[in-house]
Length: 428
Image (cartoon, rainbow, N blue to C red; front, top):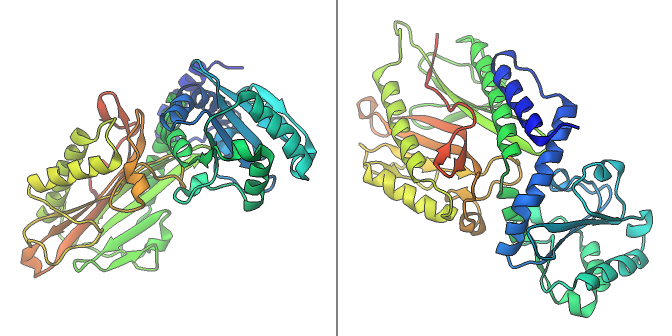
């Protein structure tokens, strides 16, 4: 069995080589990496997530054959996963009910109280759960239901009622939603996830390069290109991943991603299709890139650990407006704004799980996503959009580009585990 440092080093070496070779991650190595990530998150992220939310027991129910988004994070496809804060710097981890061999092999759990009959009737629930919980006497029990966070809402109505009945009146009255614990647990990152993000980010960069390379002007359609691919004309009309044939003068954006298991990394790239007689980017295209880099630097300087996503959004809005830009809360050009001002929209959402985009530095999504605090090693998409007016083309005419770079917040501020969009590509 490799140690965690050896595994991390191996992933890093493969990641460095993957930019040109586009090799994939060995499934066995990935499985080992996932084990290390899971144990590190249980050790370092889970205690803080539970204590910050005032919870001393977290019960997460996964019924057999019921798809559950947290299964990769917890390591098993069914069972009652119970995490108990019994003091000290470590959370006790137990699985009640069935536990497959793979779960036993993770090395992440302390106790297994198994039995295939667990979900088949009420007896197993009453016998196992009530005794287990009573022995630990938690004052606040988090259960995986929620009205806000879909990731935290995995328990069925039947299992919810059975759980309350098994706990009994006293303990059932101590049950609260686990949405805060789950949100903080998923948004908290450990080093292994950052490494996976870097590896898959480099894979994505190579993929985007390949997609740009296969473009043949006047022949290639947006549907021929892998990813979320779009072109907006000067009036803001959009063609997206359809049969539109790329023409000279188009600005094209390609968003793509790669990942397996517990981490997915995304990246975006922008290109300009040169017109006849053009050897390089025209002034308008160079200008919008310059604006985009000013906004990138504003974000880099102002996104920090410890603020909520909503507070961060307010800081960014003020910063871009102080710089002379117009902030728009929707990704659409505001025809009523100052026609000389370039317009900026933000959606800097969490990255790692496709189904968990909080904390979210954005006007989009629910309030709970903006109320979350940005944790150390928060991984997110550096996603923002730029609408630049070009008055000489006519009233309301503009150019549009979008960004979807991957980033992480460290003690030093925003850093990138893989290259951002490096510039607007010349497509001849």
